[in-house]
Amino acid sequence: MKFVKMHGNGNDFIVIDDINGIYKEKYGDIAKKLCDRHFGIGADGLIIVTKSTIASIQMIIINADGSYASMCGNGIRCFAKYVYDKEIVKEKNMKIETGDGIKEAFLEISNGKAVNIKIDMGIPSFSPKHIPANSDNEIIEKELQINDRAYTITSLLMGVPHTIIIGKLEDFDVVEGRAIEKFHLFPKGTNVNFCEVVDRENIKVKTWERGAGPTLACGTGSCAAVIACNKLGLVSSKVRVELPGGRLDIEVDPLGVFMKGPAETVFVGEYKLE
Image (cartoon, rainbow, N blue to C red; front, side, top):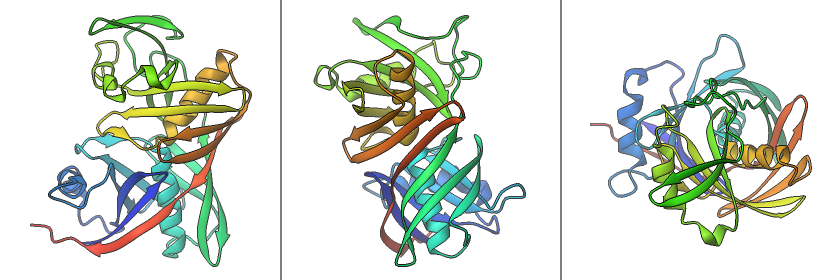
């Protein structure tokens, strides 16, 4: 099986072309094998390129633990670069089918290759029903006690569930996200983003990703953090997010959320499936 290893700000993925659906019943097992950093290739997730009947192309995301993810911000930028560079989709503006609906990608091209990619991430939701969360009210600055530590959380759906905790990053260990991810408030789990507000145009974020653990960047998490901080009046509508693996530019407006950042190809190869 041929593959391409890619990353968006250090959030890394294995991309495979499965236009004909050859591996469709094995995506979970393939992801667990390939994403293993000791016995496989190593990645935060598996991205599958396949056909769409409602958009230019379809992206399927599988987490490193074999679980399905409806959306991934860094992943979709890698996906857009892959299908453009491989001439699977030749338009600089393309519509991509995801588990969170159709997303539009706007590509900057240099020497025939996609470099920076801007994604229309859609409209977030604070509805507990959408997240989903076991709550009758929106989860905004809610106090939680987990493992003898108090947290103030804000939760929303940005393609996938996200929980934001605002404070100094040095006061949190990202592995604290493990317990929050599986807290009973979130029946399907949640991604956890620790966020430090630098000023109204800049924040810092480190993320514990549901199904993957600590990652160097999270696109949907960066969007969710900006949305939460904006709702709380802490930042403006245009914010630069500093992540362990790089930077993203996020813009919030009434029509949705826009994320801009890089995507890079690391290497190509073949993997022998047993």
